[in-house]
Image (cartoon, rainbow, N blue to C red):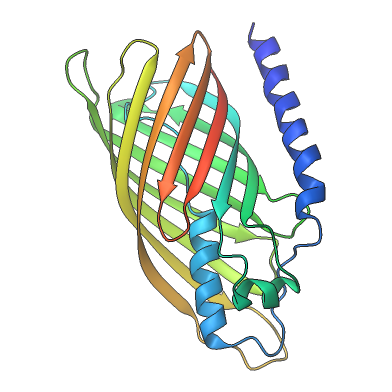
Length: 246
């Protein structure tokens, strides 16, 4: 049963990459010599929110030795017609920046979970790697919800002209009803971005705190689950995750 589920996950990821590649091909980020400070700041804000950590999980802990692994896709709605995108890419990119991801989470003692995520936007040089530590303050019962604190970090990869790290912290709540578990949360994202170009007068670094909320729902059936989530910030994003649990 588990092997069949894993095959489905891998096949789904292949389909996502195969169909996304031609759409996003040729949309590499490369900062031109005339890129302005305001353009760098605006690009850093939107790109930082686009790659920020997406939990795609309820507040309730996985439990000791619990383990989830899955594939997911996040589509971030960028302001693609603005000069900071068109000048950085050399043309107008699609309005949604899509990230197929591999995402794993593991349960630890005392209500803690850890998670890792890796993504590469097909046809671009934009990628990310990230991690999280979540602590369920309240684990939840049949009658009461689970409440959790999460800290996370995401690192931009593949874009040589920009050195970017995105830190996040949020408070979330969830309540299971049979095989359905809705969840929601709110937090702050800290974006830190530096101009990494050489042999040129570098722009000032960009640092900003941005608010971010999210709502989602998890459907579970035996060892397979599907999670959908919408994140709300200056760059809204929409994600789906197909998961297996051990």
